[in-house]
Length: 121
Image (cartoon, rainbow, N blue to C red; front, side, top):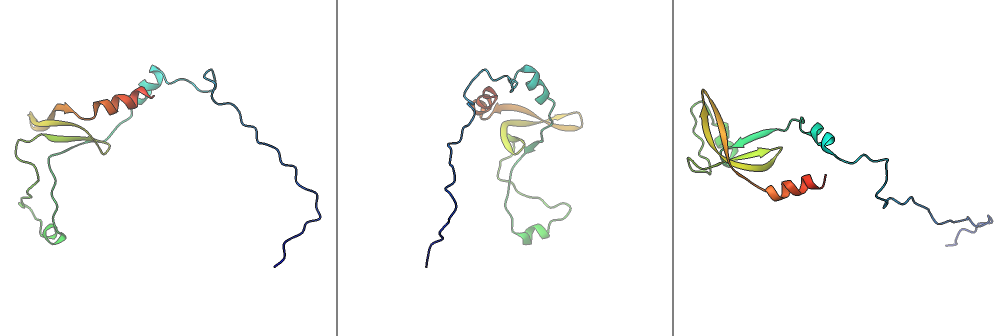
């Protein structure tokens, strides 16, 4: 096998030059301030309350009907999990408000991680 021989002159190679992004005084990027944070405060998030979980075979689920009782992995009266966008945020107790159910938050979970993520903004 032979190599390819080129009769062309060698290509001029130069070192690439990149802008210096390490300067703190760059005015092209607006700092994240209270106005920007305020815009985020109106973004809707999905909040759900989980009272327990269970795992059942498809055969049992196919037999579900009106009046079926499903046993969950938590005891009656145990705190429920408050989940925001798929992340556990807090624990709470179920309360009745008029004809509706509600949740009273008893413990915030992962406060340090939440504060760290906000301070990096």
